Image 1 (cartoon, rainbow, N blue to C red):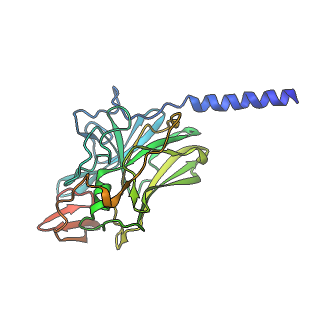
Image 2: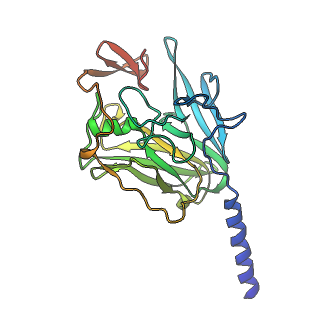
Length: 285
């Protein structure tokens, strides 16, 4: 019995040691890797990204960014973008800002925007990913708090949800749902999400859903911010209180009175806003 007990302790210690060796993805700049070159700017997976996927590393994780040719000489981005933008205001198309302004820790953080056809967003050597910090993007907050040209202002019954699905050898190991907004409140501070229930995984896929949907899917902007991916929950951590929609005045939508129409051109969704045309990422065409 003593031998079995000792063996169990050794196995447990080895498992804890293996997970303790995980290097957290902090998204900070490093030589030959992430390079957010200037203040309040972004990095989309390469210093000079070409059209197609771009895989890059932070900590023990590999992340995916995508560069798309939208035609007409315009290049757009989605997937995971690294930014050091410290503002939390949204008045136009400042997609890469967090609801609280800046990172959870350090200078940089990452912003996810739905890459549509991507199979996974993050890969790693098979391990238990204990968790990470998330925040709403200022863009999504603006839409939920004020409404915009194609999404409604949130009420008490509305919700906005992030789903994190874990895979191992191509098979789903389960999912964790985290509400970015519900019951009349929304996340506006960096908040820890526990992923340990997924067990040992080697890939992660993010997805977002909302109570506000239309003919082209979810109307709420599919963006969220993340930092310290793979980090342990801090000792004594207390989840921050959420903000209430009716009390928040941190962001202002200046364009709510402009008529907007969604159409499909050449197989792509485009948005006609007044006398201008934009792609689904908000860049003018």
